Length: 246
Length: 49
Image (cartoon, rainbow over all chains, first blue to last red):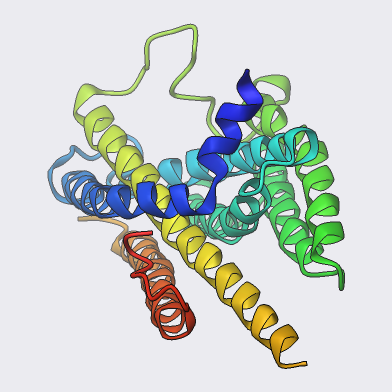
């Protein structure tokens, strides 16, 4: 029963109709929540007693880190949909998620570095959390490269899907690295099993920024996917014209 | 505010990155829509398909 339903939503025309309605809402939601979250975090939230104002980098660093992992989880889901169900949009979605997820990962690493220098006295340390995040960036870059590495796009999509599934092993390593090893990076503030230890006045702007980043990520990926669907249709029409003229 | 030399680059980088991705996606979508509208024999507006 699941496969026919999935394919109904995989219809490119259906996707264009649905995404055309959804995209303005995602864009508006992403802009409003990100602006409010970052504005609150930068100007209104309290400074940390120990880290002082440097703690304000958290409102970018943590949402970018969550997005980096969530984006890669999205790649793994697309890989499953592609390899098992041959979902027509899954490969295209993976190709569009990859560069945006890589950007989120790079932003997380760069802001982490900007936060680490005043707090730890170093731009970079080979800490388990930082290293596993760097591995995630390389996985994203490998995925982007693999998709474009073959003359036959189907082979590229398949190889990238396999890499996405294998690379998903890095996600729990990132999440639990601060518990499994002694790291310079602080332990997780948000846990599944315990209430957050963060001050309430910092939690709300962080959650708003995270929601804004996530919805904005969704908007950018949706816009890229819409463009990709239209480009594929253009290629199909051009091929048909070329064959007619032969 | 302390640590401005670290906070400003962090926020600036985030804003520039988000804008770059958003503008690139919007430009690519608009270009594809225009090209498709020009060659699609059905003459449909891709926004409504």
